[in-house]
Image (cartoon, rainbow, N blue to C red):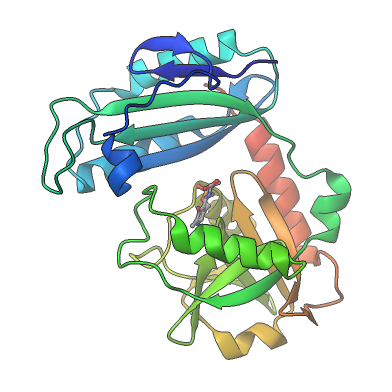
Length: 282
Ligand code: PDD
């Protein structure tokens, strides 16, 4: 079951060595990426991912040359060439290739799009949730841009796994920002709370859709930073991401959240988000 890779207009597989040594993504992390989920050969929320990528590339002044229509055509062809039904599409646009110099400005970007099979959480996992640990947020000032500068994220995630947990939740100056690969939500009483979509967090596609689903259900949504001290008196908590969906958080730094399994508001939002995700077309 070979992966399908589109590299600057050519079709190949991820087993082929295609990336030049002086690609600025490789040497400087001078790149924007996206992770799009597909189910039954259909990408979910592709337009939302495209819009976020376009905004990020604009902020870094990287020209990409796609329109929404040409990008959608590319995703359709990728799906036609992909032999498995469920997985992720990884998209990366780097500033391009140039002799290593901080201020180099290559003529053309390097664009990569590939499909990879992925095992998404099953129903038991979605109900039973995940454990998280807290870690200091060591990241830079533009966490709203989905750049490939992910060292604090990969280290945080590794620390979580080493501690027997699934995710690291970052704390910045006494406030919760987000997870290493997810957004963080708390439930207090009837209200759902998450960090405002500013420079300190990624505006997650699933975060945004979950907020819409909650508002449609007349659930109160407060977009405000959550105090680290609040973490241990929450009724429910959950994380959101493309790969995990809406996932209950059942313990934080070894302390149980709520009754130690997915709470009622979390599981309701989880189900409604899944329904929405499964109804997507390209
Ligand atoms: N991670 N915050 C961070 C730091 C992330 O890396 C991600 C996504 C999210 C959630 O965003 P979305 O709902 O759009 O997936 C929040 C992807 C899945 C990854 O890097 O693999």
